[in-house]
Image (cartoon, rainbow, N blue to C red; front, side):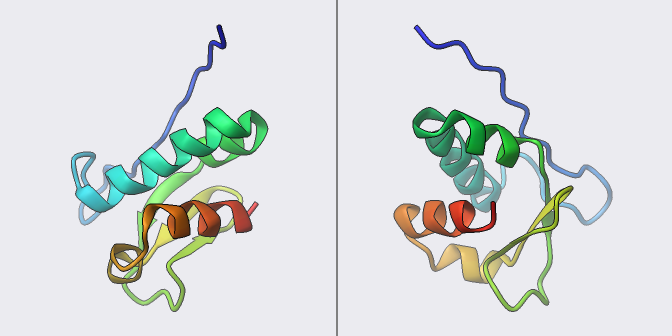
Length: 90
């Protein structure tokens, strides 16, 4: 049995996404899926804070501390495409 501890942070400042936001849940579910197949990559993704950015020209952008996302662009991705986008940033 594999035991894993995951921390998927979401910014709780005003204007930040709430944890039961369907876009945030989709991103978190993709990170969990990645963690199950590639623990090291999933652990790196899970440490990033999720930050919405409506002006982002791509769906996702990781900068080492934050995982910025454009809601409208993420909404158009399938689960498989979302996982591919997440894996590409690390």
